[in-house]
Image 1 (tube, chains in turn cyan, red):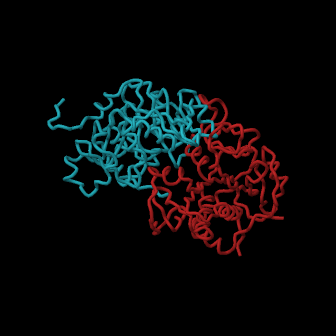
Image 2: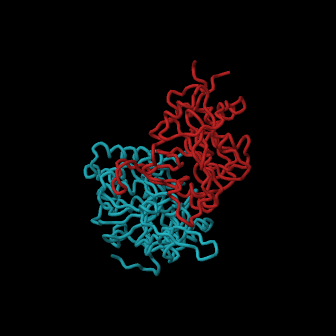
Image 3: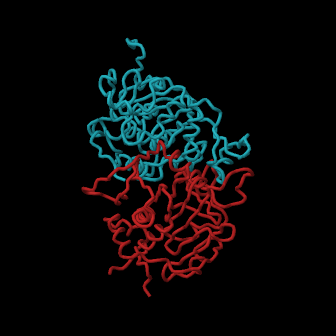
Length: 298
Length: 263
């Protein structure tokens, strides 16, 4: 390997990134359902020998594929959905087979747990979950306000991540990222909750201030939260990455249908993962085909 | 005048459920609740705020389906990344959803059916934001097919949203935010104004009897005044037409029946 010539050069290959992960790790995956998912890095994990992972995600096909491939020991989730295909079929199969442990959380509690981790706190208090089955099923403890109100709340434990993976629109080699599109979801908090954050991007530039200084507000989290960066155009496919491209509903339907017929991940993994990212991209018509996917209408 | 459909009657009833003088986010999930929210905003409840379904706030509710030349006019910003801060945990929201199961306490289930938590017989979406919604802000429900499979006997299989169940209360917990408004079904309108917040039928759709509703419900219902659910007038229908130009509402209730049953 070539030694980095410049200080703060965080460029690494997808293989190097996955090489820094190990069996049993807790890994956060950014995005939300079928949006902004770091699918190229997920595919790289699927090509690796990694196993026994705890996955923390607002889940879409990332969670479905990792479950289908037997990579997941435990899942921390609030939902797993492909939006227009509400129920993620590969995730359902894994759940209905009793294949994975789960910690089921409310969407808001989930980001609260990431924030607790980001701030180095053991937990953050919340009313959310009271009156439901979540606390009992998840072993969540209560905490009482020490002030006069004495309110009893759920202590949402910190969701500490060994690593987070994210896909963003732009970055430079120092990890100055820009997240465009209408919503970055909770990518900021995945980055801050993780001991190491690895970012794939549509476009890698030299010094971002020389290229996109007018978009600095899209720097949703600072470069001190970025450990590694790799350019992977089309890297969110088949999820969306606005404004660059929408989700690929045909590909998502093919993927969902494959859970019924043939229903065996080993038989279809080559189609949805490929031997390499280059081979995968080629099989779906190249990065130009991804860039041409229209943005969805709500 | 054309026949008014049952879906249109339900849209008006949903709109009434959203009636408020506050400035809060109205979220209607599914065509009928979404049209109900839009109708409320454009008529009696202008303080309501709505999103484009993604991240932006619009003062003119977005029409359903393909939009042609229509361009949403964006007046504000409410992405998921600040949704809990601004809308849910501040109590400034009223959501209307369609859960898989509902019980006599108003608890709902969206997560799983049967089996165990480790191995459910049927895995659904997961609890999503239901726990937070239920403890913090107003909620209503729309049920297009009223049956005892939805309105279950006993309790829901997995309590995804909090209701008025005394057995689910922890001493010292603050449950004051639980605010179940109405359930609109293809048969009737239910509120939680019965004894100790028990579900109570407040109006029956034209031609429906209380006994018919009870027979399709897995738990005992209380009976309110039992008036007839109001029909939308020409102005309301014109707004509904404008917000649903492709008549997607016709696909919601089986066979798209008229509001007034054939004699």
